[in-house]
Image (cartoon, rainbow, N blue to C red):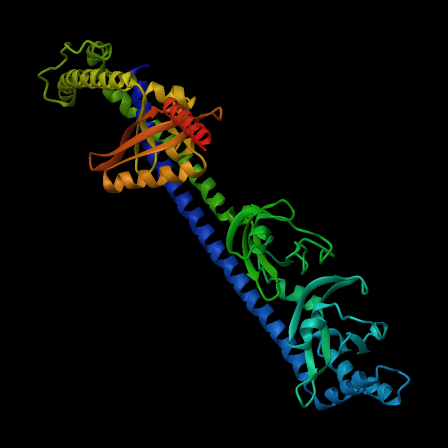
Length: 506
């Protein structure tokens, strides 16, 4: 390639590379900023929705507790609990009044879609705003069992009787002596739950917040779903993390298979998880626009740089041809070639620089040859050792080993360079070696007996040594391992012989 072309390419590289680096740095900074701001935004939405959900639950609890503490409610519930028979006029009167004067009016507030009273001890529904539910028994339901002693929230579940999702809040109705005579329960309006989860997303086209219960079913309607509540299951990395009790941010595919950034937050009282997600394509759209703008700038700079580089290259290429022959000689290995001139301009300085470079290359070549001979000698010493040799740093990265190490472990050099020493052991041996390696870097020296686990799965007993070596302010572990298979066999033979002798003597 001619000097002119080379200089043109050089000028282009000097123009393109810095621009590309600056563009990439700007892109990376922008991407990280977008990720950080998006994560903070999603987390803040989860916190806000969690608080709204908590307030909704607390309002539901307060509403039903206030209702259960009304003297007339207690009186009517006591009458129904004592009679259990619709034929009884006092029962009918209490049943009528508690629904007409107390339960039905409370439904107008919009929190509940049904209110009902269950009398102890069998959970008999003595009064309900839904007439179809009267005279049914709920003695095995958690909202009745736990509702006898405290205010209890039953997480979202599917009601076969109503054929729809349900969520119930229950609380005890107690007489003046503090005895529970009945349980008042309210079936919450889950539409309000979905409304709470809905976001005023502004210009966002993909922002989505929804609830998932511990059985992986939707509890609120997602933005891109219809009739999903307790009918559609969702299994994503976000739901798995959230339902495990964690709170955090993740990158995964959502329930539609779309790559998203998602925040998840576990709600222990309801045993549900709140998830807020936004598609990665929307989140990173500003960064991508910046990337295309940067690409356009790079192209414009390249065109301008190409024109300027061709002009300057031609002005200096002619004098450089004088040095081409000498440069080729030096490039071919003839370091004795002299191309220096007495000229005082830049070309003269360049020619003398070639001579200095040739001298430095001669020194470097000599030093490199000496280093190569020293390394060959150390490799010969390591490979002549009867056992395995190894050297690794405090992070467990192998730096040197001999041929025996490769033969015994059955791993290639490429595989060994990516392994940790503990990868060659299993079970208790791994724990033992981890402890001994730690001791070497603390105490300076240690030994151990353990079984090498080869690539094929063979277990070979070895005696290992380790000594701490400090090289260039860094600590390393250097050691050797010796196969003690024969020793182990002799020990087993002696043990067997000793056992037989003891058996004969006894």
